[in-house]
Image (cartoon, rainbow, N blue to C red; front, side):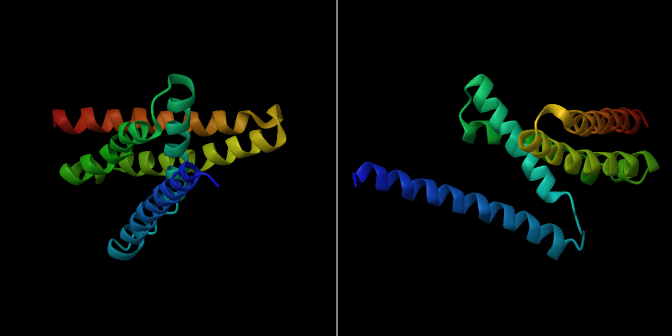
Length: 149
C-alpha cells in the first residue's frame, strides 16, 4: 500500500474524529450544562453539512472554508437572543424558534426521502426549507422590532 494512501487515510480519520468531537461537545453543552433538550441539534448539523456540500459542489469552495462560512450564520440567532434578552422573551421569538426547529428537522428528512425514493416526495424538503425561510424572516422582524424599541 502506498504511503500517500496511508497518510490520507490517517488525516481523513483525524478530521472525522474532530467532527464527531465537535458534535458531541455541542450536544453535551445543550443537554448537560444548559438543561435544554435541543431536539433539533442533529437536524441543524445535517442542514449545515448540506449547505457545506452545496457550497463545495456548486461553487468549488473548500469544505473547511465553507464550514467556517456557515457556522457563524447558525451562531448569530443564539448570540442575538443572548445579547438582547427582551428579544427572546416575546411570543414571536418562541414561534420563530419552533419554526426554525421544525423546518430544520423536516428539510434533511425530506432530502433523504428524495434521495432514497426519487422526486415523488420533492415537496417535503421544499416545505422544510420554506419553513426555515419564514423563521429567518421572523428573526429579522424580531431584530428590527427590538432595535427600534
